[in-house]
Picture 1 (cartoon, rainbow, N blue to C red):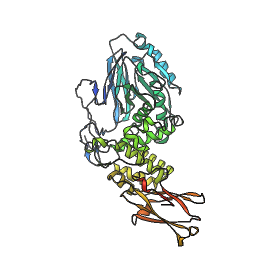
Picture 2 (cartoon, rainbow, N blue to C red):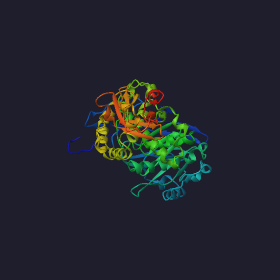
Picture 3 (cartoon, rainbow, N blue to C red):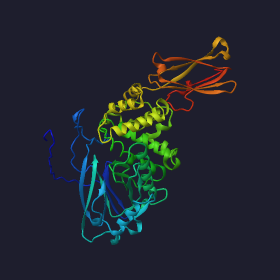
Picture 4 (cartoon, one colour):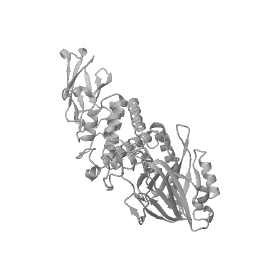
Length: 493
């Protein structure tokens, strides 16, 4: 291509068989009403050329997912006319592929926050649900400024939709399509509600959803994300269904809007997304699933509810295929836990929320490296957090804070006390101390991480008036301390 702008057209013939089980990325689900086809990674794609590494030619291996460039997609799907095709982006020819009644229902869905059924279970398979008796129909979709598109097709799905209200006043449409076997008040009948609320939460708090539609397909995929299209397990119910939907659509922010390199830095999409998912948990329906044990006891998200880190061998910066597979879930959990620590303990809610939004805005539709993220948060938060980035992402260090001694000034509690704490492992964190005096008074003291700059021991002079009954480090267990047995000092100790 010429350096000052050029255009090249490439035409390529290719084909493949749609697998029944496409490594949890695409596939075929056989249901009573028909086969559900979920199609992704279905066309030859250019690799990314960026200003850091030039051509990014790492092959897709499965665990670390994709690194894609942005473009405008204009695509056509020709399928048997008995099928309905659901695609990333906006349908361009509804009058050719939908009935007048379906178009009317979609219009009604665009005007309400309540779910509207486009095709109900009783209509599936009836000739009246299709606009023609011709054997084939061609569906035309477009999607602008996106890194990919995916689609699904079936003759046997319930289809419903609603309206998403965006901060700018614009609207988008969340849709769910799922087998009739998935209907139920604890199951997929709430799927569009989950999708709508997730999109509104993420749009309000991080970046406005930039496309017109988002489609959630009930399939034999446990959970997979593409721009404007997610595939999820048709058997899921209750909190796990909420979470897989909010997780997969959350990927439309990281890495679909913020285009990080998943091939190398899986934590920069899976971890960031897991963080915003738990943010959404607290907000959705007044915390309906915020503390549901089905979520917090579930493998790779369990760290957010634990006070200790597991024994790790590989740091987060390890490229995906080099990570010990048994521990690759730390990409999700350790990253999310780290961001939560920054927000709750280190930086504070207001400054961290501002900084994370600024990172999202600055790198929307671009390709940030990990260092771009680190620098952007440092700048927006107004604080040098390189000590945190180093230990959390480049090492497997652990934290062990301890209370080692309490002494009184001149042996008189009324004159004050010297409280000595120690950092026994390599990881450092701010200190949270709860001090309880014998007169019943208690106080929380917070010490910044800078107390460890000159060594691993720090002595605090505390203005006590009576004897101290107890000193507790990290009383609410918000830090990843690996040994809490030394976190408490008692007067009789």
